[in-house]
Image (tube, rainbow, N blue to C red; front, top):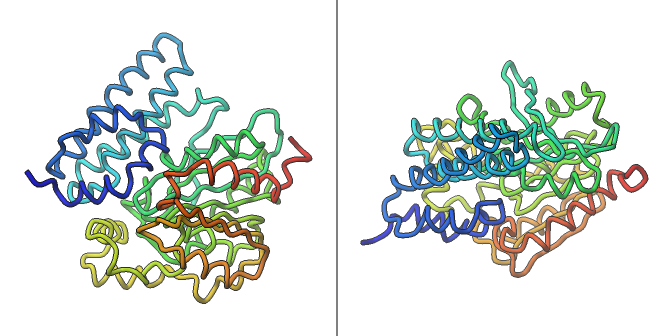
Length: 358
């Protein structure tokens, strides 16, 4: 039997992403082995997630809270990757997403260091984020973590440990069109409005340093981060990994599934309408306004965002820059995390002045 094209697209592009994000290899194998029909993708992953969810709840009942946090975090990832591109099945997608959020939220208080779920006011709505602060630092710098098109705060959480270990707080957030916000707020090109709301909220927190704010985005978040830094001067350092310079420039080369996910999360009815929204995701007129230090990463084998995007960002910013082209890296360099995650965390700690505090 011929495997559904959606399954081929996801497995061919994102297998390293699943494993690097924390999905156990055997769970990935059992969720995908012999999979033929796209409609079976979500229930297969849910089945694996339920195993870890049950183990996490059992551990919690016994008072083994660290084990509970580990299992529930894994369950959250499995539920997330079950629903992350299942836009053709909205009811099941939303229900599974709720389970991913619930498991991660249950895990937060028992993580080391612990985390908390927070709500950030935005245009009459709320954006949800998960804040974790490093231990033994009264007022640490904070790095805003921005996920990609079909990603969520529960996935990009994987970048937090490297930041926490270096004395920085981590704030993974679901912005418009992402995660918990995707149902009420569509994708928008002017992400600076979102960044301003986030930073205003940071300034209201006495346990965070509003003078040392970094922003870090991957994939579509890798567009949002420099877009925010173009306008929001309270951002002191920016990291972009596989971020687009002009998201619509390769619209016709994107997979059918990728375009359909964008259409759904931009709240448009047709691909033509979605393309109009895609054209608003551009740095062409504003990259020159980026004056804070920026670290630009691209994968030489990236089939989703071409290396040229990183080169365009680098050529147009006005501030200090580091450009890292990982020649054997795929999209977001998920296949080479050891060439990106420690390096960007070290760089951020230097830019945000952690060494004198930690």
